[in-house]
Image (cartoon, rainbow, N blue to C red; front, side):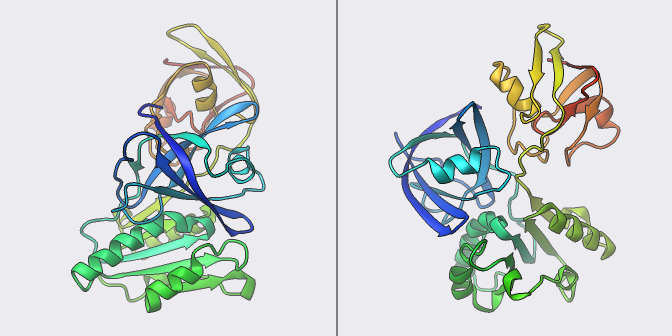
Length: 319
């Protein structure tokens, strides 16, 4: 990862039993500005290995002096969320990457429909700050938020947003038996509406299916998902240009194994979405797990952040 920024943790807030918010300031100079929908990679030196996890930036875009992220403690954590929850304290120093934006607001949208599931509310905190500022400057900015959560567990920011947004806020508390009716999100919306979703994969899949059924073009549905790579069978990879052979453990991604060996591959999302880490392979069995490559591209390329090789042979990369 290039352009590393040294930061210090200036505040830690426990928002719910499983969600913590962290604030960072630069050790030297100012933090770069960012646009709503941006994320940063945070370097996490967990026991046994270093992880690089992507987290959405919260808050007001005009305050470049502070970055904030919110992290849910995952039951199946590979160590990243647990490290942040259990070990990181005010005063600690961390390294982060410069902000990147793969989830920007569409500048020509007439109406913005924001759909968050649980910790998926995080990118929308910056969205909402930007949209409300635009509405104050030019009244008539059209948007609505739909937020599905479980009270007392994944409802970080729910009370704050309900108060801030008024009738633009639509909350669905699973603990109270409330469920988001995804089909209703498309009813009666003006031409030029765009829908943005961040949350569980099942929520994204349902909205993709419904959008297609409603005749929405793919360009009107925007989504983000920072999913950790799923474990799999260990496999062997060979780098064609150097002849180096690497063993990829079951709980490591191919990208992590390459980085541990000193092979840097450009990347942004680390979740099989953005395409930045697309790498050509020359032979071997590949288990594709990305959301970016089409079937033809998968015949010669993979995304090492999530894709894995087969356990019965060696995967040969054009590296």
